[in-house]
Each structure stands twice: as C-alpha cells, then as structure tokens.
Amino acid sequence: MRKTLSVLFVLLIASTLVFAGGASESSTGGAEASDATTVKVGLICIGDENDQGYTFNFIRGRDEATEILAAEGINVEWMTIYNIGEDASCIDANIEAAEEGCEIIINNSYGFEPFMLEVVDDYPEIEFISCTNCASVFDGRDNTHNAFANIYEGRYIAGVVAGMKLQQMIDEGTINEDEAVIGYVGAFSFAEVISGFTSYFLGARSVCPSVTMKVMFVGSWSDATAESDAALALIDEGCVMISQHSDNTTPATAAQSRGVFHTGYNNDMTGIAPEASLIGTRIDWGIYFSELIRNYVNGEEIPQDWCAGMGEGAVVMTPLNEAIAAPGTAEKIAEVEAGIADGSIQVFDTSTFTVGGEELTHAFALDTDGDFTADSEEAVFDGAFHESLFQSAPYFTVQIDGIEWLNAAY
Image 1 (cartoon, rainbow, N blue to C red):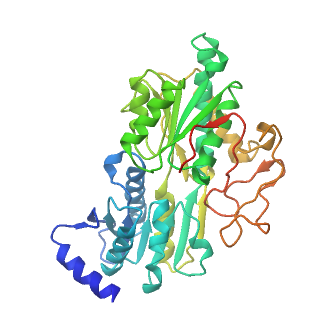
Image 2: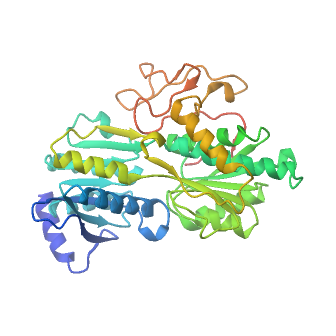
Image 3: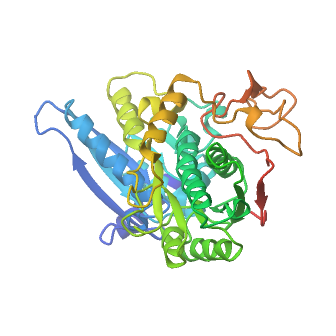
C-alpha cells in the first residue's frame, strides 16, 4: 500500500518538483557513446548547495564522481532531492527516489538513517547508503551501507594551522598565553562532533601549548542564525579563534565581523571571510561515490562500512589563506600530512592529553550491536585511541582536559 500511495502522490507533484519540503532535481552526466552503461542514483540532502557548506560539498562530490565515471564509460543519472528534514519527510523522499527508478539511494545526513531504514525492506533490489552514520553496518541487511571518512585527520591539521596563528599572536604580544582561546561551534554533543573538536584541539595544542577551547552546541546541523549567534557568544567569552562542526558559513562571517580568526569545514570559506578564515577541511565524497557506483555497475561488492582518509584522498584541506596564516604554516601542513600518512603522528596519542588529570588507558569502540558494552572493542592500544578503526563513524566521546563545554543540552 505504501508504494501505491507514493506513486500516486509523486504523480500529483511531478509538475512542481517539490516534495516533502524539498526540491527534486534530475541531472545526467557521462559518456556520449551508445555502449555506455547508465545507472540512476538518488541523492537525498538535508540542505541545498546554497549553504556553501555541507550539502554544497556533497554536490561537489556528485559532480566529481560523474566526471570520473564518464571517462570510464559509465553514465550517471542523478535524482537529487534537496531540503529534506530529519523526520518522516525523509521516508517519503526515499520512496520517491525508489519509485522513480533509482538503483542506488544515498542519504547525506546523520539523522536520515532511521527513516531510511523504514523503507529499505520494501526495495531489497536497491542499494541504500547512509553517510556519516553507523546503524546500517549492524542491521543484517545486504542492501544497506554506511560510509564516512577520517575527517579527524583534516581537523587535526586545521587545528595545527589555528595553533600556529595563535602562537604567532602570543610571540608578537597581540595576546597573552592565557588568551589563546578557541571557540568551537558544534552541532550536537555526540561522537562525530566530539571526535572532531578534540582532534582539532590536539592539533592546535601540538604547536601552541597554552591553548584552551570553549565549545557551544546549537542543536542543529544546519541553522545559519544559531551558528552565527553561537560564534558571536564564543567571541564574547574571549575566544580569538573560531572553528565549527556545522553546515553554514555564518561562523566565518561572524568571526570576521569581530576581528578574530576562523577555520572552516566542508568548503573554502576564505572567499566570504578573507580577513578571518585561515583554512578548512572537507571529505571528498567524489572518491566514495565513484567507487560505489563503479562497483555496482561491475557487479563487485559494495563495502558494508566504507572508510578512507587523507592517504586515499578522501580527506582534503582547502587552500591555505597565506595572506593571514602564520609564517611557515604551509611547510608545517606538509610535515603533519606526511606524519599522519606514515603513522608517526597519531591524532589521539594518549600521551598528549589527559582526562581528569589522568592519561586515558581504556575506552570502548562500538560493538556489533552499535552500543557501548563490556563486549565492545577496546579502542586504546599501542599508545593511542584508534578512531574509526572498528567502524567508519566516529566513536570518540571522551571529554578531555583543556576543553570546556559551555552547554551539553543536545
């Protein structure tokens, strides 16, 4: 009954291309040769490319994968559905994409997964992908998959860039050591965000030992006003460097409006905040999308839980704003990238931080049921917490010394 009703509803709205609060867009790319293979892929997005952040980065990945696959003789017809909420409208969007003939459906937001899973059993022939999430790998289904990347590596490097700028300000007498305070705008107080701001902080402290951090959560992935307000509140708290795990560019513009510095996420934000934004980091989703679609077309296995890092090109840095970066920053980035690649730098090296004054010696990763239990995998060994080793989605949830949570309501 659900499928029949969905078809009728889609027919009613086809003339407007508006569905469940979001606009649907079809695009085709690929080789022109008549013998090319064509595959139809749905991409369900929490925002649209106008955010110049999270969804914009997914659209960039979509277009990159289309170009890569075209050179291999694979046409990709995309059905992109924008501005879907983390609610029942996501169920409708997945049904719409399925009924329109999509063979692969990619959901781009963390909160989409429970709603996607309401649909997958009705379409066992379709491959469903939940990006940045963790439940699909545990659900026992063959047609559900998770995908993420080691973004903590890029955040660590962004933190190094921020720390070098803070240390320059200290050395030049612009601020005192105790004024080297980072303000971090976080979406929610759970593992993905905690892992991100902790790795960022550790990168900063590796080059600026006196740095501290204040975190403010906004309770939303994409609320431009709330993100700006949080950034401004952090600046009022004395923060002279702003960073973010949120979808919009407003923390960057807020930082510039107050004369402090910034590092971004998902996009190069130096264009909208050239006097503030130093660098950013992002996941290159084109790497995953092209592998996913290629494997599907060739009848090869699609990983149940895909993960890659800087070494595979899945995590990249945006261009360094050398006009305002500290001297020597470019060379330091190259040094740290090489250290991460060869393993000589462990982002969560347990000798570099404490928890309640003590070194971290024990912490769980998720077990096969997606919970922290006594049977979970031990994530601390060989002197480091090993993030995203046992599953792609982050599981670092430790609150380390030096980082103050100003709220934890989300």
